[in-house]
Figure 1 (cartoon, rainbow, N blue to C red):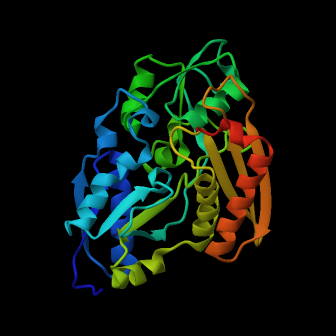
Figure 2 (cartoon, helix red, strand yellow):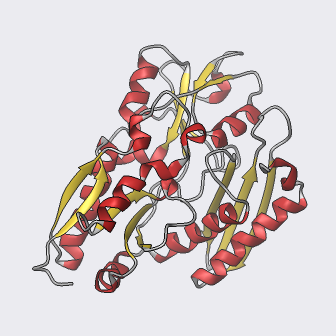
Figure 3 (cartoon, rainbow, N blue to C red):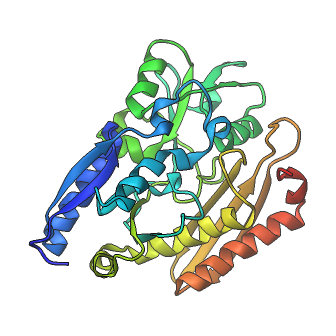
Length: 310
């Protein structure tokens, strides 16, 4: 891979996705001396907005078209929000880099209320994430949580038009687009545990592109990579998908990775939220994945088996 070899970055066309792709484009130029152009694409996940992801095939719907562009040679790089990347990549693809994480927390966004606690009884909160739904209802069982799909700007518009008292969004996306002022409060990790990979960006390439993989390794933010590997291992061990209200978040305390995981029931009112915490000295990917498997085992010990489909 040389500076004279132009790259093409496949990306979704939402404003946030383009910001992410342009961020990677700038990193490639500034740190690796590589030039790249963008190939904007509309994915099936972007097209179907009248149903929740769990009912139309899951998060993989945001990456399949981009992977097709890689496989066909129309692009060499695909940039994703890591939380949208399935736990198992198709044969022939690899995650070549995970970049430094933005704020991983969930944000409470409202026009008339400063926090979840201020919402009136029976307030309507917008979210299509089963993970957020189960955790919201564990905090406020009285709420009406209604589906909310679309890109970030669309969701904010629906709030402003009065369809919801409040909505819950990833803080990272708001901050990246200069919309941090829309955040009324941030959920503490103890209140609302993020999903695996939230706030991190992943760069996907063809697995046989060894020269590009070697170049992109210089962009890896190792603390974020190891934390996300542990989080994704929890989901992988429990068969995580959009139909499973699963959360996992790793945070560093010195050289120790502290991993929290939570599992809700698909019928949010049916069973209590299960929570587990583990910690370990993690120095490589293998150890990170082992820590994630340990957290998943703890959840199973707490009764996770009855929460899982099938």
